[in-house]
Image 1 (cartoon, rainbow, N blue to C red):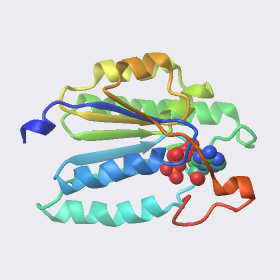
Image 2: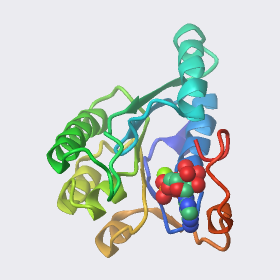
Image 3: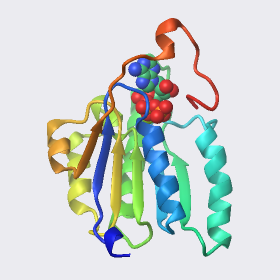
Image 4: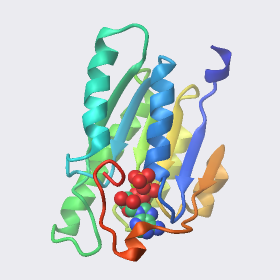
Length: 186
Ligand code: ATP
Ligand code: MG
């Protein structure tokens, strides 16, 4: 299909909910169009998420059916938070490993869409140098769609991207003290 030959760089950023789920929506759409989709999560490592369970099933379907693409989710983070107890060094190591996998993924003919979830957040908190993200965009093979998510996309990344959606928070149930819900938040 001609329209999917030229890979795009897409960014989902902003303080509103919907960045990761937008990227996952794209992944679903691409998978349905027989694209091979890799999702690397830079922060999440908890293993307990609805998308992980769903994608494990879809991944099996992808391996046995010619009607769809392939899909794989790798949770490579250590669950970084500002108040977390794990050492910053461990988060940095995890982020560096994720970056290595990202570089392999975007320079080979193994995947058609590569989603780097929370990579912008990893840069914001100094787990990876922002310049490494710029380099990834520059190194990307022409036909691969690269998707970056996380709050606070920098001007330089916005400049490089083909598509940027800045998702604005108007309301969030957390403000009313409503806790995160399975199926909505994770
Ligand atoms: P989602 O994964 O639901 O698409 P997201 O990727 O846009 O959310 P992140 O910044 O990655 O959001 O934050 C992850 C978690 O923080 C999610 O559980 C989300 O519901 C929550 N969250 C997102 N935006 C807000 C907000 N403005 N206030 C409070 N919590 C938020
Ligand atoms: Mg997210």
